[in-house]
Length: 162
Image 1 (cartoon, one colour):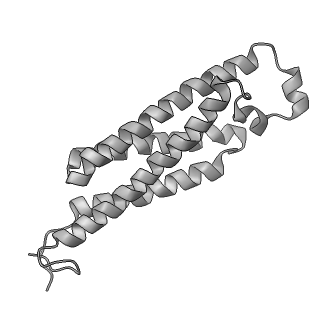
Image 2 (cartoon, helix red, strand yellow):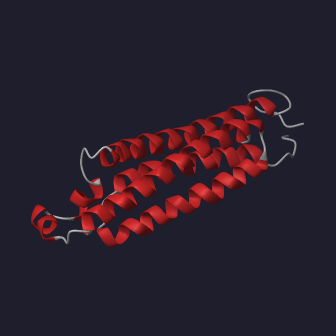
Image 3 (tube, rainbow, N blue to C red):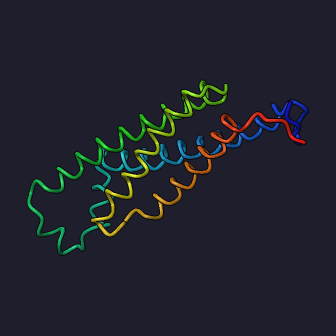
């Protein structure tokens, strides 16, 4: 068996690495849930319009927009953020009940779904001058570290150390 800092069979170190990866993915899920919930609350309860509106347009440009543009943007904001909340909850459940138990299907599901969302977040904001780059970078960093640690833990070589 493999010798590591945590135990003779390597399971303690593997479990520690997997737990660390899971914590980063929990953080991705929690931060995404928090941001999306705040935005959804603002738009659904009519406390304001989509934050993207003021991130992209100047006040004078907003005043010249057609009557249906702002409600359409708010509609898309509600739709996107409701899906983001649902994804965050599903990610939390997959990490909790799949990844933490060492199930490789959970790793692949998280790699594909969150990876898809993170890549497209950068692609979507590029034509708008990357207005959300700070959020995208933080979420992507949490994802990359979390999925990297988890993958390392699940797929590392089982060869004996000298």
